[in-house]
Length: 260
Image (cartoon, rainbow, N blue to C red; front, side):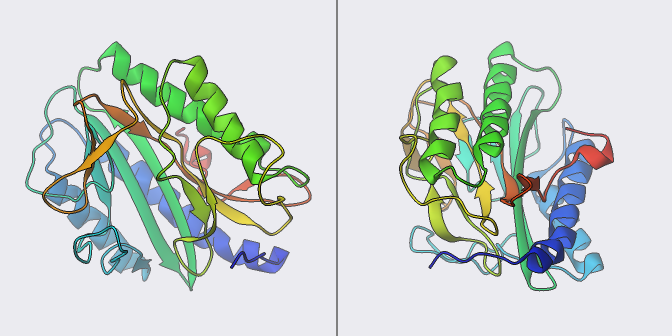
């Protein structure tokens, strides 16, 4: 069921969005060559506990997951692009890192993701990160009253295709509110003017993600981590966005922290 939020409810979602933004900014700043993925998870867990927030991931067990996730953040590295289960791995120079984080604060959920390189970057990694970020910006620009879900999907795909990337539509954006995942699904490709009409009060997690040379995924033995079938690297960008009569509100915006 697709739910619309009142202006008061959107205001009530702001603390969750701000907290998610702050945590991702902190983790990005503190993640360097040598940082262990389990240390990232421990830090995120501690920040959740201190804030009195609630993880959306630790008990999460959808049909495609082998077991409850058991951690509080997704850490996807290099050819892993989604649902990366934190494990005992120390980051190496040049690793491409995607962090995906969702929590509930006072019963309202926010969800966001960021990709970056630790140490010395490869040009092709910076390029795909830039594409994901520009695709997210295009999606947000399309998230206006009077458009449809297909307009958001088409905006994302337009950026990706212009840069030469293939697009997987199995995993994409989604409604968000009291729960982390709700209707509607927002694919990363679609036809303009099609799909559910965008109305004031609709809150969406928009999340373009791409792989360098494929659109096919394989699942790790951990039952969660999704990797490219050919070993090429990927990037993921995500914000929680409220659609209003005055335009989109990015609830997980990090710019107030002086970061992108």
